[in-house]
Length: 225
Image 1: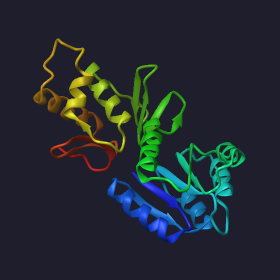
Image 2: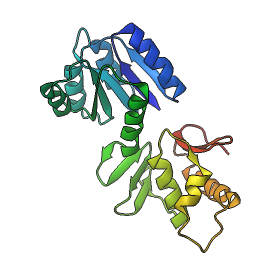
Image 3: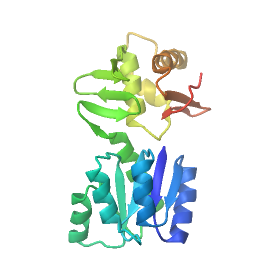
Image 4: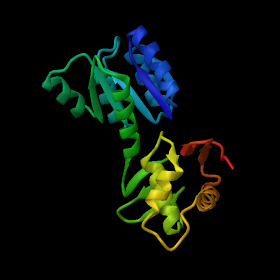
């Protein structure tokens, strides 16, 4: 996941960058609002952390301009200002979540994962890369074309999307399939459906990566077979 960190405190930015990279994010850092605005409007990101107290251009202005440009990526706002008016102003400007300083990194990480699991808002579902997944209508499209999925492939893809940026274990997959007693829920069966789903995602820019000894991760990149 590509993340923009807009934070002018150099010590905090260095610490967050190191922790975020350990958590699996590719981090681009902007030390002021002008750089943050330029990067957000010119480069593709999956999520952004935006400090409101940025020099040159304040974070609230950057956020407003981002939304005016119709950019829909999730934005988590960081600020030392914790009054109700400050929180309301950030949310009204287009923030998806709000965290006041000081904070603990596990909470920041959990909030980022929660935003990523929502997916960017699109008409008719959530989007991840070339995939649009509509749970309510039970419909999925890939590059605008209908994606035909068996019930188990649907449940597997749904679980992978719900756990974006987190590894999905074989135990979680088995639990998701537990109500279906007509088929084997063993590891071999899981690997068969992972293989089938990978084949259906080929050429889309999406892949299911095997995290050895842990499970599987849906991401953008080269297919892991």
